[in-house]
Image 1 (cartoon, one colour):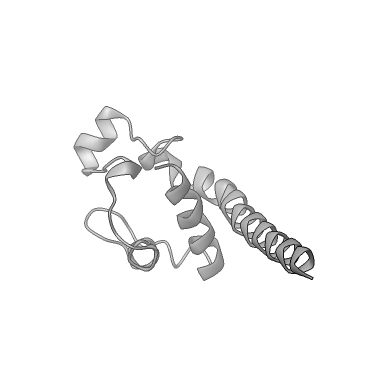
Image 2 (image 1 turned 90 degrees about the horizontal axis):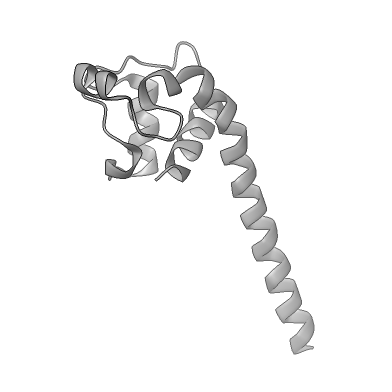
Length: 102
């Protein structure tokens, strides 16, 4: 009985982890098409963009996922709002991917 419960727990954890990795992978295409030009392919902007637009590397963002989603959707500082161009799901997927770059 204990083996069965342990196996079920491992299976559930694997499914959850695989699901979250899938969301980040789905966000990679959205990120590359809409975010990479300023935030860089690895989450580190080029020196010129970083200076001109005041864009920080992904590792320096301390905001929560919700705060990042809101910033992408509504815009913040010099970043324009992406909600007219992207769906809520696309924004969440892009943020999930961005958060893996840290």
